[in-house]
Amino acid sequence: MKNYSLFLLVGLLPALLLQGCTFEYKTNSVDDEPFELGDMIEPFDPPTLEELDKEVTWEDGLVIDAMKLDFEAQEKMGEPPINIEEALKLKNKTPEDNEKILDTLGRLPESEEEVDFDGEMIRHTSAELKSTNPLLISSTAEFDIASLTSFGLFSFDRELKPFAAADSVKEWKRSEDRLYDKIVMRDDLLWSDGKPITAHDIVFSWRLIMSSQVPVPAVRSGTDKLKWIEAYDDYTLVFFHPVPLATNIWNVNFPIVPKHVYENSVAEDPTLQTSPYHVKIEEKPVVGGAYEIVERSVGNRIVLQSREDYYMFKGKQVRDKPYFKRIVYRIILDPAVTLQALMSAEIEEAILTPEQWSSNTNGGEFYKHNTKAYGAEWTYFYFGWNTKTPYFSDKRVRQAMSYAFNHDELLNVLLYGLCDPSTGTFHPQSPWYPEEGLKPYKRDLKKAEKLLEEAGWVDSNGDGKRDKEVNGKRLDFKFTILVMNRPDRVDVCNLLSNNLKDIGIDCVVRPVEFTTLQQYTSEHKFQAFFGGWGAGADPDTSENIWGTDQERNYGQYSNEQVDKLFEEGRKEFDEEKRQKIYQEIHKIIYEDQPYTFLYTRNAYYGFNKKLRGYAFSPRGPYHYGPGFSRMWTPLK
Image 1 (tube, one colour):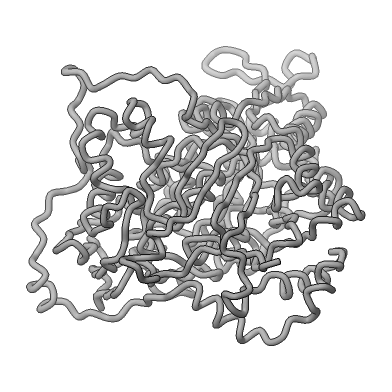
Image 2 (cartoon, helix red, strand yellow):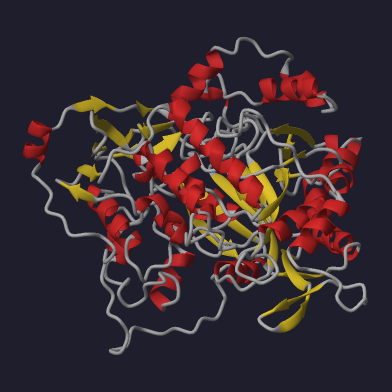
């Protein structure tokens, strides 16, 4: 899967499930601009493979079996600190308890004979799917599904180091000058409709992404840095890069869709979603991963089933068999209802809110069926300011917002002391965080008022409200902040609103559905919003958020120095020098405060006691490794 940053917008979010929804279907008319596949790609006449092999010095790239990697890592761990029975009885009250639970229950099976391969796992999600097409994913719920159903050539480990996946790739060669990547695919790969997966699917998917009428801003970021992809036969392809970049390895890692499914329909409906044909494909997508969707019930559940033709080919097992026959996603929006479902074993895993971790999961009712564990996750939350509005165009005003907010009350009361303050786009544990550290903002009303006055926001008529003359008219400082309609997220925005009253600013909190939030932010139709971002596997992926005119730069922030540094970071191969470039980006964004950075969220999870194999990475317990869950359940 593509390793771009995920737009979390409050973490677990409801999105629009296409099944059962009404669309206005419109085909391209003669007056419309005709669709052209790959119209954003510059023409290029690629050399033959023989010519390339004569001219290029190839080096071996890493082709790794992800499960084998995990098993090898486990062998080095030694014996678990306690036995299974002790771990299941242990209550997670301290970091030491957490380590014991993870080190004991988080292990892979010692042999396949231990695994209940016919079992199912019932997962939780608070989000409907806006799309099942991996090119269109925009939320964590969609990413979770796509990680199980999608086909890809590359993956990454818990340290976010990339490799070619042995499940898909026979050979990966990289040119010494980093201008070419050559992949020889396996010939035992099938789509869920029985058609072979070939190099032509990869080329088609790239051309689809690079079609201006196809709305895929998230996956286009990075992919647009490729010069060309050529399929020399059904299983051999070469990626051409215009210049040697440290990020080239990530630019080749984009979602793949079946050519035969979309090649004759995209011209009629470039959205890939609204035509009757594409609606049907959304409901029953053709996939190349370990699982396929076999049931979707709006507002209720999504059922995935393992594909025998994923791991079996011509009567022979060719890949690891998924540990679950079925994975069921229960859709529950309310965190309180989610916790009750976990306690009654109606679901078997769920993210816990800070309040639930601290106060609601310590007794026998929770531990009857469950245990809990956590790990650091490189996810941060923020108030996003639209810098093109008269309210937030001045960085002094944005800094004032950060000084006006009561960060201590957020961290210690609303978040129960379980989250750390955030200072910017990179997590403090990442190598891209400034070595000298940065001081998180604290509430300081005097500084906030001074900055607002310097920016021209004063109480000109003595009514207790700040105002400013803008384009010849007196404008009150009154703005609206959008937030997803989930109580704990609304509480954060209400705290901001109450804080701002103390300095003469009206902040109206407007809870909305997630799809509305997505639409307004992507179209820049907002003044402020509450959101969150998850880490990409490479720091360059955040250019899509901070680069001038980038497609997910919802706040329309622009800084020439930041743009220049992102460009330098892509070109730098020395790891230490590259880290310093992104550290500098972090510091500049901290100074400019296009967001008020609030907190980083650890991944706090409740797991049913039957589950084994959970382990955390900077992207949570699921987002790395093999193309299916490493969790498993033992035979009874």
